[in-house]
Amino acid sequence: MTKTMGTIIAPAAAMTLAEAALVAGVLLSLTGSPGLATDLPTKGTTPYVTHFVFRPLMNVDVPGVGTVTSLEAVGPTENLKGEKMLDKMSARCEALSVESGAKKYIDGACVLADADGDKIFSTFDTRDLDKSQPDMSCGTHLITGGTGKYAGISGSEPFACNSMPALAGAGGYTAMDIPHNTSWEIKK
Image (cartoon, rainbow, N blue to C red; front, side, top):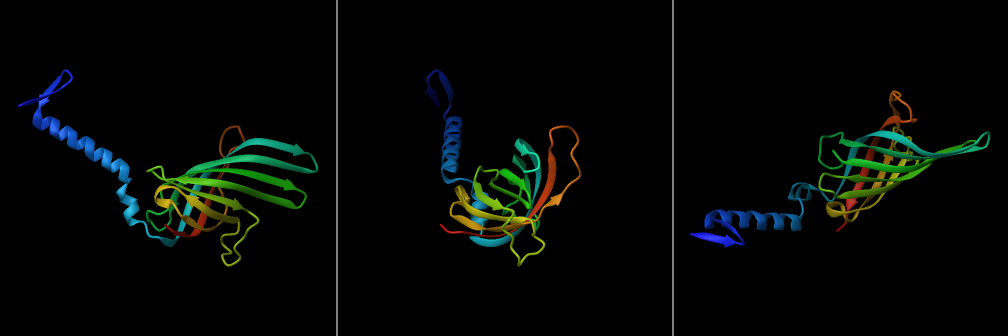
């Protein structure tokens, strides 16, 4: 027995297998990735590090008065406990670095994206320090939301800033490891 589709003739068993594969693919795309979504707890504390490369985008410098620099930072995350949460995500941040007199701070926002394309959004401020975690003395991220499996996420991420050796080449690029100690919750 054969089935005709346009000008293609194929055995019925092969067409049935192809149809089943197509239906399975459509159903999987509608339900999302089952791997992490079913294993993801609704709250936790997660230590992780982001291995960042910083790239200066623009700079305004008034000698003797102040400097402001816009920065982009990109890099992968690594869960320090070997767990799935906040591990192997792609981080991208936009920041504003201000130096004027005794004031020196960096404010910005970050997006972490996992392999499924689901995202976590946070803002950060290097003036906001969690005094209960003295090792995290560089600032705090506030998780404000997410998409996909992270929809409804919120939390706080005190962080440290560990400078890395200077990068080769021109452009003013720098590298830094940023360890975080994240307390988070997902409310559906």
